[in-house]
Image (cartoon, rainbow, N blue to C red):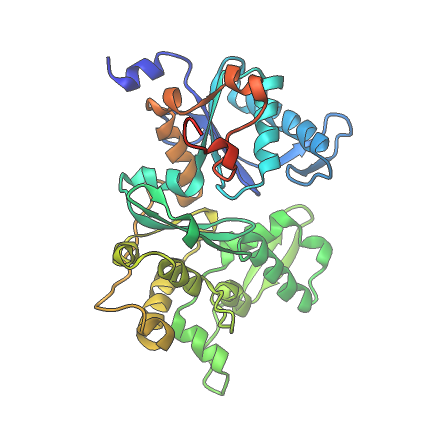
Length: 378
């Protein structure tokens, strides 16, 4: 009997991708998540709505995860988690306390049968069925770059920076407040809506002309009016704002920490024999990568740095052309889709942490813990 049929004859595993801003949830072997919801929890004791990862103690995090997962199971998925298999998409450098607490909630409180933790960059790449790529995850709190070669993550070349969706929101808010827009109108949901509906990444030529100053400034994009639905207020969104908020990802600095530099430095940290393969297989994932114009601008910036920057010109050799993969589906749930594919294979049987094993030690094996990675017999 094929592996797929034997796995799917049972209850399908539940796949969760709990991000900083949004959580994707659904079942294994499905093409789309059942729901994409804000990563917020309404506390049953106080009725207060707050972000899931805003906590002071581990006990507070435990209570918030219980309330959050109950909402997922009994309101959105409409299933009982008892004796279910789970696939959890996680950041490979995420906090250990979050990983351990989430496992304790699932195994002890919800009595699930097994949990499979999968790394976000590697599992996103599995949707393409290719073994090698440079995975760039543009998320809410950060942008991270992870090279993957022959199905193995090159951890030493991992890079990340803090310009994600939250940094874009802060820049939009700063520019609008400077134009005398009431700060009370600029809630997180309004800022996100303005970002998605009106903002874009401009071309390198227009950005350079604006940075150089002078009289020959490019004509700004048209202004737009944004209506705040809660109180019928109208926010005038300047064309200059629409075009410049994403420049924080491309700002030149002595630290060389813009997104193009981040990608090139990550490639340089890999051995010479894999660099060309990574340059020709860049894969952008995450909700932040869906903005209009980002792919074209990134390609322009990378090719410009290879040709004009002496630091990179003497380290990269030959005719190099950056090439990008197109995501299967939408980039904001690519990692979840990889988890759904993983949950439909025999990996859910062979690689999962089962309840009996967890309850013996109440510990989740971790790649960074030497006690979990000693050779057999040592």
